[in-house]
Length: 265
Image (tube, rainbow, N blue to C red; front, side, top):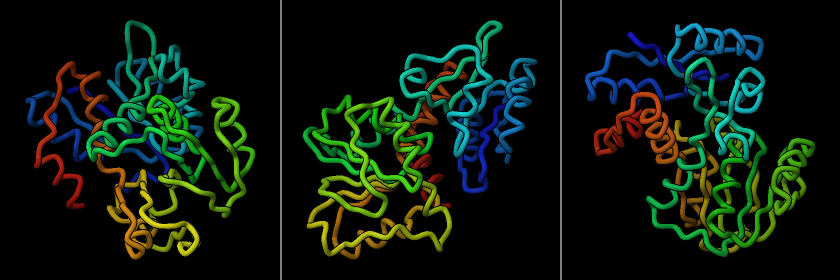
């Protein structure tokens, strides 16, 4: 039986096993997908298991999308551009790192019929998923991308990859049409992102890459001020859909049952 994994730290919030195992069963495949809590010093061992065919494929989540690259042989063009990997597989004798977050974000925004063209974007965070989001935003012809992060050095590192990104001070909210929480703040019920909602204007779009819990405090507060909100559910589903298709050479169905699998947890 083929074995697949999602690795990260934390990992208990991940619904990847539930979704992938549903598709595996639906497509009558001899496979199993599990989640594994790992530390940075275990990444090499995980990749060795892929090399030995003990593990068929790996999804990578917070905080290892960049650090995993050191152990891979080849990066796809998308992974090279972003220096971010969320999907791993073996081809011949090479371990390949790919990025399905870009497509996941693009398709999620298309799903809700939101036009990014000429929009001003504010991104909170500078973690592994942020380069993928910026890459997708640039393809969509946004007018401006501002970025703030608690550690300014990490934000500056992002700017080295994408020189059209403007770094602003943590906690300082600039003019925007869409604000994206790309941090892990929101995984815990006590997590709060402080924003002065009285000063940001009306009809803004608050997007959170977190999908579990399905409504973070970031989104709850935005709703109180009647802003449009969206969580990372569809991005999660679409990036998983691309990874599944890559691994199994079968395109799984995205239907109401799939939406419920992710929504009901």
